[in-house]
Image (cartoon, rainbow, N blue to C red):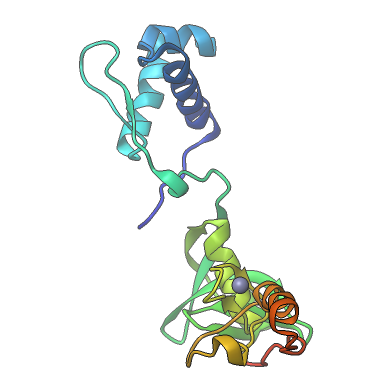
Length: 204
Ligand SMILES: [Zn+2]
């Protein structure tokens, strides 16, 4: 799902609407928004509300007090990161704008790939992409051979196969879960599963 970002002014209006509803139990009128935001005229508020409707953040009827905020859950994240998308050999590559130790640039293609600096820097930008912190963390984890722990669901940089007490083929475990289990098994069975050892080239 593509998240359409909102401008600072649009998000100020959205925040005010949410606060107003939270306090009063009903949505504000356009006039109340205009007054609160100190706009010169109500057409500014109208315009901002229209943008919020178009972008899917609110709905609005024709009569007063009909603004509704759409619950977008985690998608409603103002902290989106933006990246340029370039075309290399007919493939779309997200330029993560990050240099590696061997002077390459990380370009995500669905797989964690790297490209020569000269190459990615000279290629025209075909578009932009935005992602949430969570999506970005997943990509970062893919570069460091990490990924999602099958036990706690956290995205981590390093993963290991599960220890023998919890062995399950194809599953991966993070250090947090491993260390927790190590304590538990030591305490209840006097059994040491050993220290966490991440597997290079893990999940990716
Ligand atoms: Zn875990």
